[in-house]
Amino acid sequence: MEKNKVVRSRRKNLAQYAYKEIRNRIYFNQIKPGELIKENNLAEELGISRTPVREAIKMLASEDLIEVREGVGTFVKILSFKDIRDIFEVRKALEAIAVKSAINRITESDLKGLEDDFNRISMELEKGKLTREEFTDVDMKVHELIFNRCENSFARGIFEDIKLKIKQYQFLSYESLNNSNESILQHLEIINLLRKKDLNSLITTLNNHIDWSLKCFLMYD
Image (cartoon, rainbow, N blue to C red):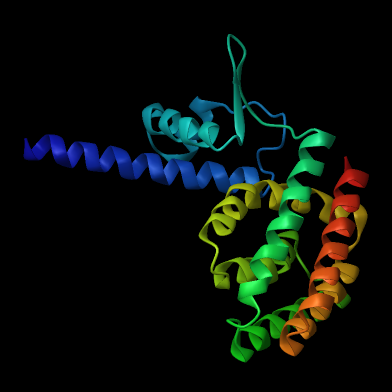
């Protein structure tokens, strides 16, 4: 009995490991939208059997990140124009809800850390040393902070569900659109308004930023 429990625990851990690795590869576009997911290759690269890879794929399918086409294979899901617009429409409404309670729970220490991050990547951008991974990681931090500090757990949950899809297309658009400097400036303005606790201006600025981000993604597509 104890041996069976250990086996189940190890299998679960391997599935979680495979899930995180495949999820990261989707996020960083090492496996691109529309690309076939090759179970054998992934299992070999991760040094595990196909069973935990299959379990990981089921988890990713439940998150609507991949799709299984019967008799064809498993693919990273491609978002349509409508999907992207719908996601950003929901994101806009959620962020307006979240910031209302988050604004008084975000500390000066939080804001100083974000400001330092954006100033650092701004300098790296000027030197031509900013990587896509670093940019997309910092770019989402302001929005993650707003949701982490908000009191609405449903808003937090929905944001977590759509966050990877947003990051995935953000990562794709980074090099092709060359919009990093504008994004940094917009985020620094959001940080400034959070510091002033100017809720009305903040919601307007967030809405404009999200609309601008959507246009960038649609231009990439």
